Structures are given as C-alpha cells and as structure tokens.
Amino acid sequence: MKSPCRLLFVLAGFFALAFTPARAASFDLSTATIKDINDAIDAGALSSEQLVQLYLNRIAAYDQAGPKLNTIITLNPNALALARELDAERKAKGRRSPLHGIPVVVKDLINTSDMQTTGGFIAMKGAVPQYDANVIKRLRAAGAIILAKTNMSDWLGKSRPDGGSSIAGLVLNPYDLSRNFAGSSSGTGAGIASYLATVGLGSETGTSIRGPTTDGSLVGLAGTEGLVGRSGAMANSFTHERIGPIARNVYDLAVTLDCIVGIDGNDLITAQALTKLPTVSYTTFLNPQGLKGARIGVLRDMFRHGPAHAEGLALAEQAIFALRKAGADVYDPVSVGLNLDRIRQIKVNYWEAETILDKYFVDYGPNVPFKSVKEMVRKFPDLVKPDFIA
Image 1 (cartoon, helix red, strand yellow):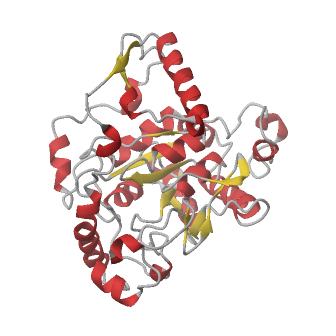
Image 2 (cartoon, rainbow, N blue to C red):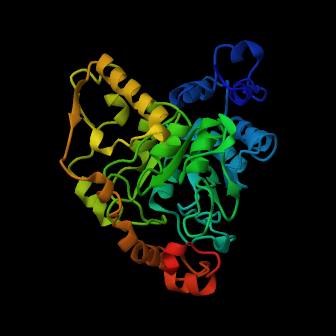
C-alpha cells in the first residue's frame, strides 16, 4: 500500500497549468517518459515554459513548504526565461535533441557558471565557479534546462546524519518523512522521486548514485570510469569517481546518458572509452527481454549478516528470484576467495582526495573561498570534516 505522503504527491494535480481535464486523463506526467513529454509539446498540448512552471510550483509546495523535503539548494532564476527561448527555438528550428526544453536537477558539486556550486559546504555559500562542468556544457548544448542545484551529503563539512549538508540541512525521504534519504546524491534522488524535475544528475565515489536510486524506487547509472567526463565537479578520487543520471524510468536514463557521454579534454580517463562508445542511441538497446541468457553472478562475499540486515537480505533474495524469472543465468554463489570485509577499508579515495580537490579548487576560479584543502582547513577548522584535519 502506498504511504499517505506518496499518495499526496501522485494526486497533487499535475496538469493545472497545461491541460484540460479531458487531456489530463490521457497523459500523466508521473509516468510519462521524455518521449511522451516531447510528443505532448509537439502536439501543442504542453510547452517547456509550462513544464518548468509546473515543477517550480511543486518545488514551492512540497520542497519549500508542506512536507519541506529540502531537496534544493539553489533554484535557477532564469529557468522560465530560458524555457520561453527554447520554446521559440523549437518552433523555428526544431529540437536540438530529445532533452530540448527538459528540466534537469543537478547535484550541487557539479559546477554551473550561473549559479553557486557549494558541495553542500557552508563555507562555499555564494561562490560561483568560472566555468560550467563538462556535463553541464553538454546538457546546455542539448537544450536541457538546469532547473536547480540539489542538496547533498556535505562533501567537505561535518553534516550529520547522511543525506544532508551544512548549507541546507537534511533531505527527507518522500516515502517516509521520518527518514532521511541516502547520500550523497540525496537531493537529486529525493527530487526525482517527488516529481520536482524530469531527470537529474548525481555522482558517486562508492554508492552515492545507487543508494539514492534504491531509496527513491528509481533507476540510476554509475557507469564505467571514463564513460562520462568529470571535469568541473568535486570528487574524492581520480580512480573511481563517476557522474551519472538518475531518472524514473530506463528510457529517460538512456536519453540523458546519450547527452553526457564522450571525451572530456580536462579528464583524460575518458580517452579509454573512445573505441567503446555506441554509434547509436542507448535507447536502441532497451529490450524488455534483455535479461534472457544474461550471465549474472551473486557475490555473496559482499553480503552482510545479522538481524540488522535481515530485511535487506530478504529483498536481495527477491531480486535474485526476479532475475531468474526474467530468464537470466544466475550463478549463486560466486566468490573471489578474499576477505572483503577487510578490503572495504582499503579505499583509494583516502589517498587521492586532497590532490583531486586541490585541482578542483584551482580550476573553480576567483570566487572560490580557498585554493587548497590545507587552506580550507586553516580557514575553517571547526567546519571541515575530521578526515581532512587528520
């Protein structure tokens, strides 16, 4: 049974701005894909401006008032004006891409040259980077609208508990307001789960896309290193930091991935993907029967044990059963023969974080409050994470 909060979001009147009651019955934005939205715009039943206003109304009603989910750090003050421009361009020249006029929310560690980028850290409040991140450049070129920068687990400061920041506080779970939302891409996950934008971008060093995706009943992708360029985004690691899309359906995820993959001249790890990128859209690979014959191993070495994990383990067993039912060849168990409890503690980001963050601060531009981790610790010793001081 859906929670009262979930029902509240679904029944909130998606179409007060754009549709007559008759049309509303045949088009539901809560289940619509980007293709459905584009079809509605092409048919004259919707515009990007109306779509943006719809999301702004929902942010005001549910994020800043009502349950106060607290998913947003910064709203784009030019979003409506940009939507109007993109509507006019669409009529005159057609769409740039499937993302033309589509509102996107972005984790607030990804640089936007027209809005502050803080990493959730109070000492970065008001700082606006000199350049867009690689993925933002790609989204803007495709005609996407950066609607907002989302709240997150504080990248640099002492936020507690997970899923919140020193600049904006805790992100709530729209399915259960007594709970927080998994970090660190918490605001993007909760925002997409609450229909505050069409798609979003998150990032992860470990599980910061996959955790929010799970908490929000969403789909997300942390791709192979080198698939998506990371320049212009805070990171903890050169080795395994990733940026990826978070969406409500796999089609939207594939469309967004089409836009953001490719060579990033300031992140040379992307060169390794040159010969591996598809020559057609990722949407062409979507296949409801795609799991038939897929070989999937269950690495039970990584499963946790004990009463505290009983519910999660039961869900894992359900997922394994569903994979078999879908036709996958499931190999259970498989093992690497190592003590993975110990390996979990050997994280390269402990050794790489300072170097990659120093590069990020230098590239940020003249508005950055500090140009190195050491300077940050010296200026704000009571605000930064203990990891940086140690």
